[in-house]
Length: 275
Image 1 (cartoon, one colour):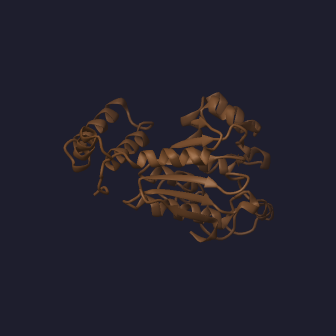
Image 2 (tube, rainbow, N blue to C red):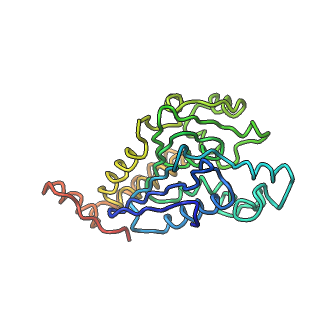
Image 3 (tube, rainbow, N blue to C red):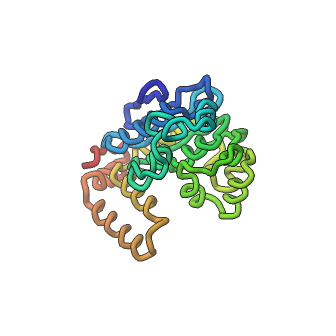
């Protein structure tokens, strides 16, 4: 993951990812792009993980693309706007399933099979906002400054923002933010649907939520995320069938039986890792 992200693993399966480029407000450079993708893909395949928290060190969650990358873009250097590395690849090439490398920086958090919680403070601009939108849940400080900022640089959101924003806010709101690039607060983010909750200490509350989730059946949590990931693209009939298939697999399983037993005995459950 290199020096751009520190991964802190808690005893109960909670993984805390800290964007560690505080001197640059955690701006996205090629190394940060690569580190985010690597972190997400490693967690995607880790059966011991129960929940993930993403936060930024210093004064910001993530200020978006760093200025050196904009300079390279202006000069037309390399095959992509960021030069070498995952984010410098051809934008049209689908390198990660349905996504290119830049889009994978946000979409990978949907592929992680457990809940991902973004703890957002300071600023979340452009690509930084899109990384946060890729999480399942966003806990945001009230004075956070957020923006769909790509229009400022003559660009459109292209780190999966169009897919992720349409899930959360009204179409006309997404259009207004995309066309204007205006900065809005964490409080407004809650009103329009970009924030799940506004709180004074997003990281503390995100970690508490993650630890709470880690005490639930990992099989049921992963099944719930699979259902929610598919809900936007499936018909009612497909989603009803998916519910039934997931529930049939859960009923009577070892972790489901342990959930019932622990509740009946009024004790903490002892779940096993998913198969």
